[in-house]
Amino acid sequence: MTKQTLYPLIFTPVLKDYIWGGRNLEKLGRTIPADGVTAESWEIAGHKDGTTLVANGALAGMPLTDLLAQYGADLVGRNNDWALERGKFPLLIKLLDANRPLSVQVHPKDDYALEHEGNELGKTEMWVILHAEPKAEVIIGVKAGTRPENFRQAIEAGELEKYLHRIPVKIGDHIDVPAGTLHAIMDGVIIAEIQQNSNTTYRVYDWNRVGADGDPRPLHVDKAMDVIKFEQVEPTLHDPKLVADENGIRRLALVDNEYFTTERVEMRSGSTYQGLCNGDTMEIWGLISGNVAVNDMRFEPIQFVLLPAALGKFSIRAVSDAVLLRTFVR
Image (cartoon, rainbow, N blue to C red; front, side, top):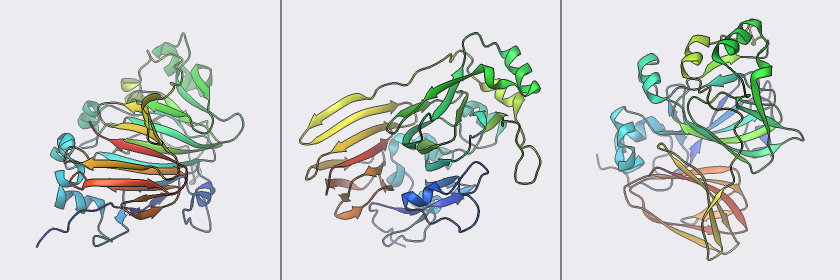
């Protein structure tokens, strides 16, 4: 069978109903169930816990996992050979509605995940704040003077909060969360999350609450203590770094790590970004505000599109002033 020529791909999200969610993703255009809460919308996902289906064009209805198996490097690019060797789509794109605080948690690096979680990847991630209530905050790292032995004793006593480093956040902030970072997203924020394709989370504290079944949600203290970077003491947020500013397009680097690079791209109405997917890497673009056309396909906020590595030339035209997130792999 001849392969279908690849084109810009959009997907039907997979929704998750964890206890900390709410109904705020409805405001972002997600159709959520009439009853209950929705915590996460997996926008581009190829994981055993959730796989998105292509929503447009000749490949509509195909799961991303099947797409990867059929197209391989033509889909994700040569820079992701390490993920292809493990049969993994490298990234996972989410929206999160933190209507209540998430658990205090940590994610492992690749080597630890491979040893302890089968063929699961580690989980380095980053967040962009799409909405924040007044006094909204996140937890990143530990307070000065925190020692592992005291930290563990506080977990057992249910009194961990005195060791948690809180950072106020507002719309537009970005937060880098490398594997090993102790963290929690607190209530009152909506976040776009770009991460390695992993669903491994080690909880150390869940605010002494119970799950939907009336029992406390499980903690993973031993594994968490293995991977927490206690040297990450009272970190601060970083300002974006200017990459380029020309022809009505301003590019700002947010994060740049071994798994992905994410930029904030600000486009004035009428400007056009000319890009090239030359086989090295796929690109994932997310429209945060405004209206754009990707190869003449119109997009509105909040929407993500995957540009396959073998796509070739592409263009993004700003129909109005627009802000986008661009993610690729070096």
